[in-house]
Amino acid sequence: MKIKLLWIVSIAIFVGIVIILLFALNSFAKQEVKSHISEYLSSTLNLNEYPDVEIKGRFNIFSGYCEEVDISVGSLEYGGFIFNEADIELKELKFDPFDMLLNSEKVNVAISEIMMKTVVSQDELNRFFVSRFPGLSIRLSGDEVITSGILQISNEEFNFEFTGDIEISGENIITLNPRNIIVEGYNLSGDAMNSILNNLSYDINFGQLPLDVKINRIFIYEGFMDVLWQSEDIIIEIN
Image (cartoon, rainbow, N blue to C red; front, side, top):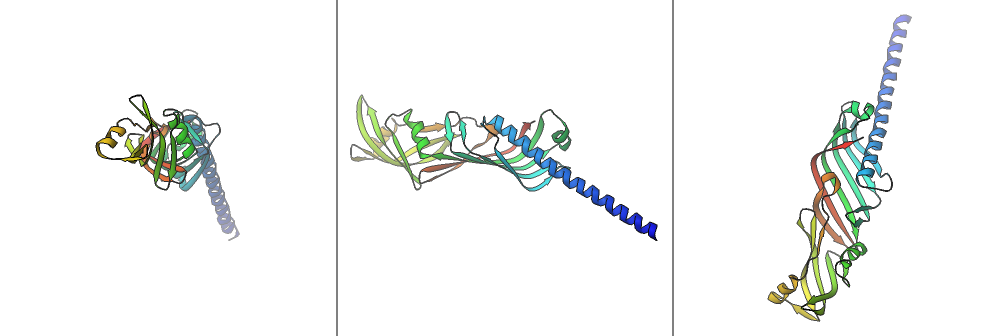
């Protein structure tokens, strides 16, 4: 009876140790995945420091699956444009666990969806546009854009102001579109307004951003603009 009891206790202790080791390995693997992703993004996005990485939802190193990874970047500069902050979500990551833990070569990670939110300040919009249109002033108010400046037509300069909005006009291109234009105190409409619009080209072309994300939506509020990006079913290489 004592031998049988000792045998049961020994098995229970062994099973407990195995479970503890498995949990410890899974926890260690989480840290490794976080470290790999942080280093990869720091290099890919040319960051001055490693971003904060948080793993959420289910994570199983043995099946090579991670439900969600959230990344917070303090600021991001790309193509000469500065984003005040960037938040990135990676959904449903799949990878080879042996490569992730043991292989020093690059590891392929399949991601079902990437979502990124970048914040653009009113000051940054002014900096960007003033370099192309000296004297231009932009104010983000509520859900609209209020712009004023000097328009040159046939070697003559005219003071103008317009209210408008910002919309997606192409792949990773957003455009500042006037709705109501006032030139030297006069409201313009019809052919006169169309003639003025032909002289205005307020586009921002972000180009091809890392992680293959594309602009999805835009939100304007007091002093800031949120640009939302999305990408689906991509494979990245990390080491």
